[in-house]
Length: 172
Image (cartoon, rainbow, N blue to C red; front, side, top):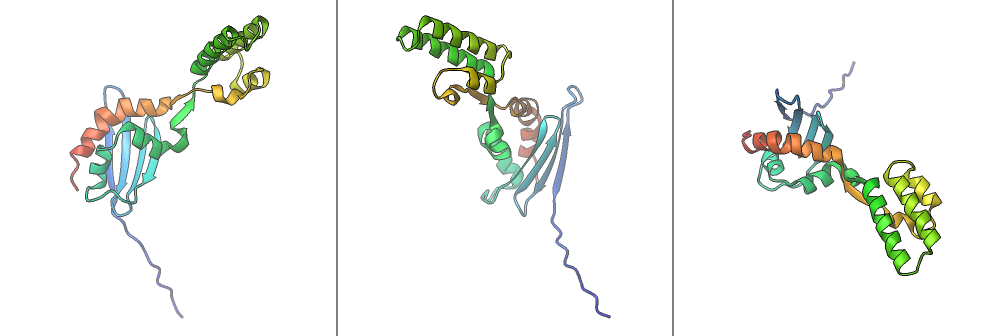
């Protein structure tokens, strides 16, 4: 009878748990030096990324030196920016006024587009509904975005005050 010996990979993972008693915010980090993998589970979301090349620094040192924009793009990809309907509606209203002044829109057309944009800004209609109802060309070009509020919350409540200082002082 032959038995197969299975191969087992063992990798060292650093586990760091951080919590703030006063606010109830918390964060758990898993740092895997050998692969550059960072997994982060927190009260403000779950994020992970694998860095292929970080130089001579430890993963903790590398992460402690990163800014919000860089980490946000790595952790969230294209979801770092989300639609901002309020700013979109404001931009559309401003553009409608410009178009009316330049004669591109009649008074009635401008009024109709302005009211439609107000509805969008107040949540009365969705972006998709606005796109279907507007007569402005290239409607998608009017969409404004903002940094994902979940990421802003994570950065301001956890990363800056709690996570970064721990990572800066972390020694393997």
